[in-house]
Length: 217
Image (cartoon, rainbow, N blue to C red; front, side):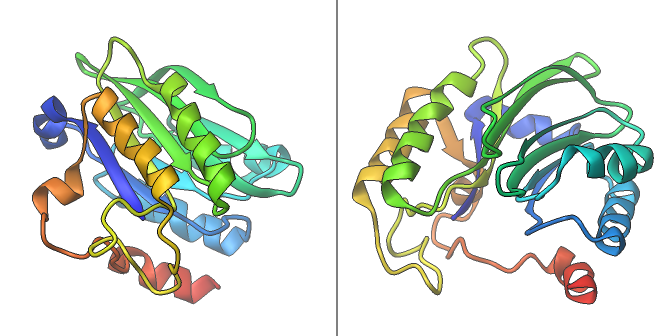
């Protein structure tokens, strides 16, 4: 399940700050790097949150940073060169501080745009149930106690067995979904997509990226 959690009072902020998240399923090919970064440079988005970058430090220094003029933070998982989270900001958004857990699954950044401060969290949950429960619990430490929070990512979980199921999802893990539900309630968060689309299935192809990804994969 791909969700975007916001604190309720952040709905109006979307009118002045555009934040987009994408599971990029690997961004190591130079052709794909050029196409994706060029797309985001042209876009109206102020902050770009990427999951599953599969980056390593050398790739970032040689090919990512030279093409991106704004601030960025990232968390790689060099053990398998898989996973990986990144938050990229346009020049009008500054990263004040950041935090990661070192396993390529969670990263956060406090960003400043004009007089607005936000804590943006990028999250990619494990597929395995027991690991996902532990990972969900670790999200508590990334929530900012002062600034509003926005969480983007792939939670690999099902809050609503009817509306959040997709092809290939055969098991509804009540334990991990309960941890996620409690997390949402404890920090007064809301799935903004579900808030705006209470009766729709949440699994949708991202048409914006279909042409780019198909062309280079």
